[in-house]
Length: 165
Image (tube, rainbow, N blue to C red; front, side, top):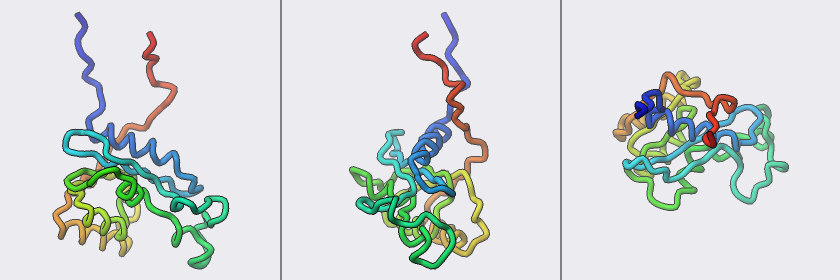
């Protein structure tokens, strides 16, 4: 009898992988962010990625990072975390959210208000910005656990085993 595999993904690695997969749906040419919301039983509740609201054509609205409010993407893009919360078919209260980039202050407010209790994130590249400092301040005050995954698994499609063997 064969021994079981021991080199499997942890739950955190697995769900961060789902966040990465969701990010691949983003049409943003500069930043692709994905999010996955998971309940206490390791069931996926919702996913999201950064993009424009329903009904707003990504061919009409700007993707630029430069320019005024109406010429850049910032006034129009819905972040991955908010998309995952808004797209959820049920309450996300008590859930964990996995996100590839630490949430901004606006997403932090939505996370807190929705009742999410744990954030697992990968990148914290904006950690020194005032909005991220504000985000962490609010999340800490609200008792939301923040966990940074230092080592995540990047999906290499070429190395996926053939399950038909």
